Length: 215
Ligand SMILES: CC(C)(COP(=O)(O)OP(=O)(O)OC[C@H]1O[C@@H](n2cnc3c(N)ncnc32)[C@H](O)[C@@H]1OP(=O)(O)O)[C@@H](O)C(=O)NCCC(=O)NCCS
Image (cartoon, rainbow, N blue to C red; front, side, top):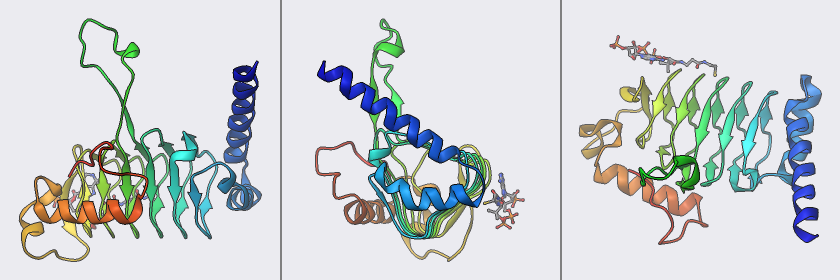
């Protein structure tokens, strides 16, 4: 009986969230600003969300203050997604924190479960239209993800990236030292340090032993 009641409650919650996220006009924007915190892990102040937001595992998604979401942003929160302050999402951007397992070729991948990898997006990041952010990625402070980028590696602070896979095409603020030599965050100690700093400060739930953040 208990599981039935529990799943009914979850269904009602999911349906309410879907309706809230669908509500059009400024009324919808205001309703989401006031009510979304009942569903998510955290929602800061003054968040502006246009209709069509889709969320899975909303309780594992945390959003800072002054963020904006254009139409139809999709966030899969199963592996935890943490978004800082002043982050903006273009229409149809997607952030994913889970992947299917497929290690065993003799078992259908659909029966192998999931790999969960947290995504962290620091403050003042602009996520362009149709961007896809992959599981395990950290986006550094002030970075810009150009329209249509597929971001499969962590991105250093203030980098401007574009393409599939996303590569650094410019800088909002020029980096100095090691970070400058290693675009796209590949294997850079500096980026790893920044990633770890950010992970510690933004994601207290993510203790040692939890899935690793890719750097
Ligand atoms: C991020 C952005 C503003 C970058 O502008 P910019 O700094 O002026 O960059 P440039 O136009 O000088 O481009 C720099 C290089 O990156 C490439 N580039 C820029 N945007 C790109 C994209 N979306 N995809 C692939 N390559 C891109 C350019 O072709 C150029 O390459 P080149 O030097 O080989 O010619 C812009 O590209 C962008 O994507 N804006 C997002 C728009 C959007 O999503 N709006 C939704 C509303 S929130």
